[in-house]
Length: 66
Image 1: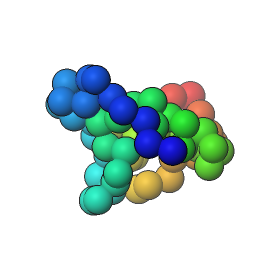
Image 2 (image 1 turned 135 degrees about the horizontal axis):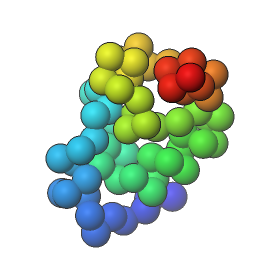
Image 3 (image 1 turned 90 degrees about the vertical axis):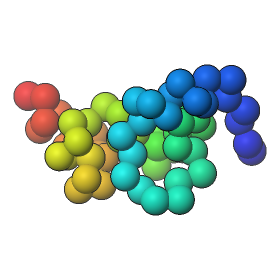
């Protein structure tokens, strides 16, 4: 199900996702829904160096901010 986003342009300025071709890039509602459904968190909650590993697990989040 596609989720329209009125803030797409503004969100893209802050989206640090490095996954090329991501259909949810800049669409925070769709991104969060997708990642939580995969039992992980979106790129924006990780620093750039961690995001590039694509390990977006809850465990990695806790290790990062412990």
